[in-house]
Length: 301
Image 1 (spheres, rainbow, N blue to C red):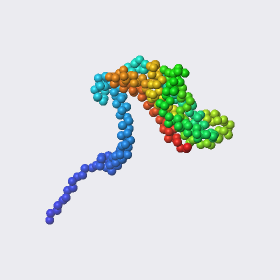
Image 2: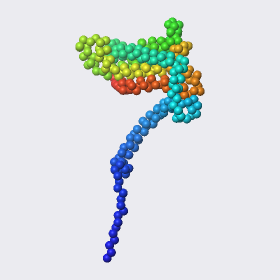
Image 3: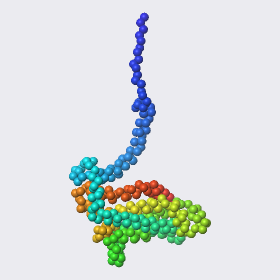
Image 4: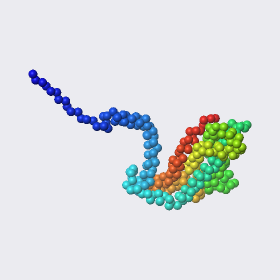
């Protein structure tokens, strides 16, 4: 009687961490799930980020390569930024933009806080009518009043050719800033105001000591909105400063720079980066307060 012996083929031992283990399959599944969930967000981020990358890479190319259509610079020409700064008038445009944006933001915040506080906390006859009038001014295009306003600044005040026709009106309030800050102030409980009055604080003291510290996110939001508006404003400088190149801002002077360097795309892109950089830096440093101020607005009417 013969016996047959069955020999088993030796199996290869699987080491931990290989793709066939349950843990590896779970990790791969989680990765694919994360990509599927965030695919739209990733695509949107790339859609907004790639133009900035293209502008920056072009700004550090040589003249010949910038016209060739290549995407990656052979050598990094940081001297392009120095060439932009040495362009006649560019530093003056930079100073004018900082002055316009800085003073415009300061005047808007200082004028919007008391008006928004009055509309949010005071109870007086015609309060809703006043709020409707403030909101209605937001629907009026600036082109409608630009001719009479220009005549006032040019013929009566003789301030055209400077940035003061752009800055001074902001000391009298901005409808959008008042509306946004008023909605934020409505979220502050009334008990804080009543406690301050019990302790002997007047309206001005309550505003400065209680309301303003608690409304910092809302104030930061309107300040950032106004800073971005002033920095990017093209229409106003075109109307009031066109006849005086020394009073141009970066947004308006960049058009003249592009015309003078229409074949030097690397210098044009370097100037564009210098115009965009302050806005991007300010937003990233104040992003938390900005988002908090916007999301907490509009809970009450």
